[in-house]
Each structure stands twice: as C-alpha cells, then as structure tokens.
Image 1: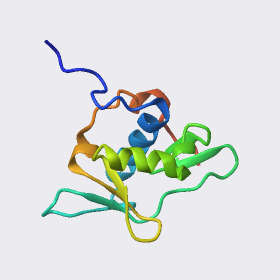
Image 2: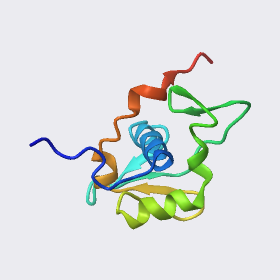
Image 3: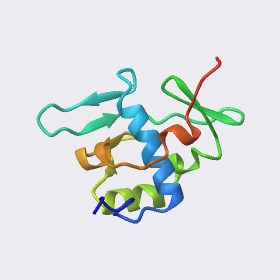
Length: 114
C-alpha cells in the first residue's frame, strides 16, 4: 500500500508555507545547514512587495505566501516536528520538514521575471 499523502494532516496554508520554506532551505543564499543535526536555518523570511514575494529564484503570489508571517502556522509546524522559529526572525526546518512531501512545489512556484 502506498504511503498516506499528507500523513500529518497539514491544512492548505501549512502545506503552502512548508513548501516555500523547503524552497528557501535549498537556496544557499537564504539558508545554512547544520551538518550535525541536518537542520536548516533560514535567517530571515522574505516579505511581500506588491502582489508577490521572492522565494529564492522564484516569484510567488503574496496570497500563497501569507503563512510565512502567520504565528499560528509556525505553532502548528513546530508541534508536528517540521519547523520551529529561531532567534529573531529565523526559522529552523527539521530533517522531517525538509523531507515532507507536500505535493505543491510545482503548483505555485514559478521562475521570477525580475
């Protein structure tokens, strides 16, 4: 039997936010990986300007990125062991958070045109 899709029952906002943080975690300019723990620290989350947000090399609708600034999303992701907030505005993505399959990465992440 194939593994259950979304086994932690994340809601749509939590899934979108986790997907965006996974993209940031794979961007060397945005993230720093701890080789001992496998965690990735993103020192600062991007903010919307106009109707979009730049996530690494991608441009994402500000509406789709609304979870980045939502404390309830971070509480849920932390409770489920996927991510936690760090010092200041940092976010720490756990190995489980890095490997969690959201199924959304191709849905709303497009190359930025500027």
